[in-house]
Image 1 (cartoon, rainbow, N blue to C red):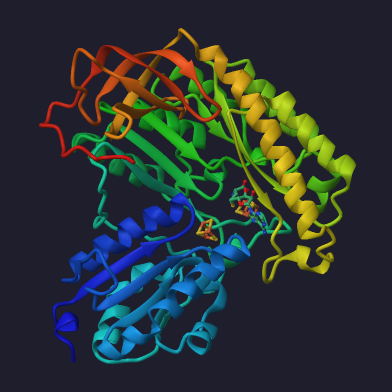
Image 2: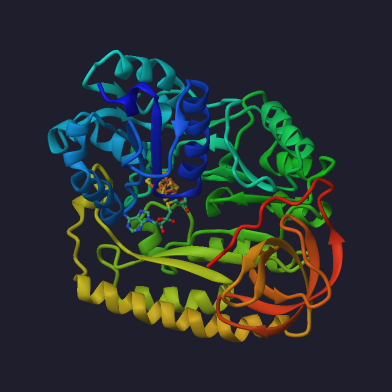
Length: 458
Ligand code: SAH
Ligand code: SF4
Ligand code: F3S
């Protein structure tokens, strides 16, 4: 047995969405609690873990490439584990494809990690944690490692019951299950006491939240977290258009700490395609929700996700997506080529759009959106924006942070040295498609505690 293993060290690499990033924070906390030490490279580690994503084929392939790259290290006594969405989707097939893997565990089984690790340590070469879709278990732990001392995630709902035709998530994350509002508020209050000022509520569909104790709606929970002493910003992601209700906008109107940014994935601007995608809303219903947001007291920035080349998407359908970009006036769009995924209903439609046509549509969409963002961002010229500082970019000589609307803001500060985690008013002097730039004008709020080591952002 190698000394690395006796020492119980682990290396963890995370792929995928914010839910995975936050799961990793909880997994790290659990491992530390079990006596493991985290290391920064595969070479140093006794246990190598990948927290994986399966949303598109490319994401899934990444983990198999990693595993192939490091296969030879198994002979040095290292163990390999696959966690997350690929683990749940592929299950024990992973052992066939990558025989040097000895742990496969989906997100709905992380609560069992301590016993699974004990089995591994006892020498079991094939350990699995694979709950079925019907599990109602959630992964709540007090052992969460949050490296950023100012901004942190809280999962409020796990899983998904929507079964959009293209999507693996309902199969990899299990059924929708919400956490009691009491427990969420307790965790948020504890974080606020420890100095976190920016709290992000997470869920695959965060606004499908249903308090199991029936105490609060999602909008009520947002407002309650936003009213906690010490909390300056509450964010939430991702919102599903079908469950996006007007009271969310009303909560944003009445609680200043709720950030005026909504990520509302549309996927397509064509009602015909939305129907085939099983999204459960039409273009018109989606635009109605946009109109609610446009009527809010504060200006709400809106971002979205789009899939191009869904089976059967015609030129006209695609044109409708482009015209929707113009109507919605998005502040940012994440766009993807449709990727056929295992188990999903869309597999029964032939993947009818060639990769070349998908690529062409993606380029057209991204270029159109870039132009829109160039012109829309000009509205910020001369405006004052409150920024939470995240770090200093030494190569550009600029500080970097984010506004409540989730805009990246780079700024200079000739007169004072800002504190990471502090909030400052910045006068915007230049705008770009994906960021704003300006000069610090005044301090709004700074943390009482001594500033943390400055993260250097490249
Ligand atoms: N729950 C969110 C989306 C989570 S998945 C919602 O329903 O809006 C993140 C994004 O990945 C999706 O919004 C979608 O745009 C993209 N995506 C999901 N499955 C995909 C697939 N098979 N091919 C390409 N993109 C996909
Ligand atoms: Fe996937 Fe649809 Fe669920 Fe979003 S709502 S995670 S796209 S199945
Ligand atoms: Fe990927 Fe799973 Fe998130 S598939 S996007 S890591 S829920």
